[in-house]
Length: 289
Length: 285
Image (cartoon, rainbow over all chains, first blue to last red; front, side):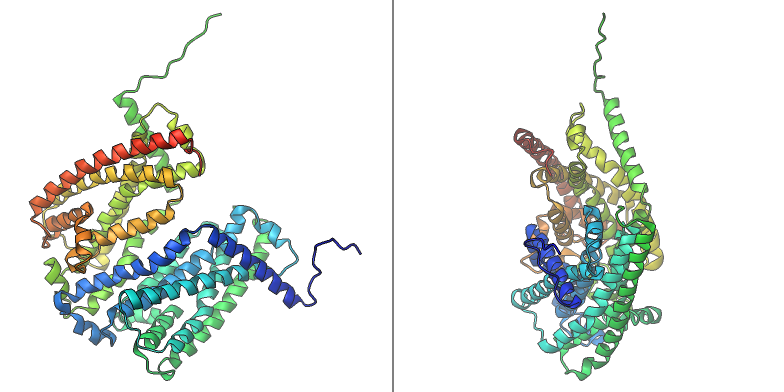
């Protein structure tokens, strides 16, 4: 057997081998991220200005001396409309980032002409996508941290709930958010230009999931649709945990539903990926763009 | 052997018009190659307005947004927002369209060859906005029709007054667009700058709320943006909202801003154009 110098032997187990693939993709993606430092500016500015659009509008609705604030309290259960909007818009931005970054991770490889050569390597193709997802998770974690720091220390917003529970609610929402991203990435490989689909999915979240308003305001038919979207439960449970408190019991129901959604969307994402892989190889379109 | 000498045709007003129509036709064809974009342009502003519609409801009693009315002079916040979204479509088309067109030409590698033609470069930039203005008009009318059915849109004022306010605002924006396009030639990677700049200027000039509601430290910033008076005057004419300054004074300010912005924009463009040609960085991206 010929051993090529410098080439490491395959690890003993398939699992360790795939971990190495994921790590390699993660490092490659991270290098891409830091190579274009404008993302740092975006990381600082967007968490500040995107919620501000809704916060300043809410301020106008509240009127001089916040005369209409009691009405908001009655509808939402909190007077802290800034915190209320920050949580909602943060979840929307999370899904938006995942749709663009995870959703277009494979498409970018396709455009660069490297997707075919990567897929010819003897690794599990799903690992190639997982590496991108882990890199993206780091960016989102930084994004959440920046949002919290900016609104807590610049705008003196009090998140009076429990940090651990907030983290738990976000973790429970992760499988759904990323499952949708994986399903979307598979779709993008097939349909190529999918900007309009991103706008459609994030538009659904924006309209139905109560990112800036309490769900009690929605008419019945819209409230029914909102109950089928996992982001509704993420927004509601994170708001409860971060702004109001009330312990684990107060979000237990939402967490259970989020886990069910998570299982569904992860399975849907995985199946869509496998289907797309088979279809693309059969039709020979994997390298086309 | 006789050699035949060819001269380039003289540039006339007619040839300039042909250039404008050629560019607009080319952009028109490109745009309609992806028709789903047009559908998206009609519905995207409505998607963005929906959360604000419900937010307004959370602050309303018996359908009356009294807090909002105390600032704007009208409880009809949806007409206020819908009109803001329509104006915002037009400002984006002019404000940022020229910068993006330069960036696109740089990316596709046609900027240098286009600039070799005997046509004033500012004319090329203006040409790139014609199609986007036409498309914006079509999609904004579509948006207003859908918005009228979904949310209700009730313009009760003087449409011609509003039109007179739009004109100096749009011409002034051309001036800004020239300067911004020149900046794109220097910076090149302008997407972040465009996205955030567009969002911030739109936000602070009151596209979706009366600027009187801004915190004290932000209010002077809003008043220093010419667009603020454009949004305010158009709403004042069309919806009869309370304006920041007397509406005639706002119209005068818009005309002054128009002249100042065009002079600054044209000069900035020529100065930066000379710089990139001297450095030889025009074709780089």
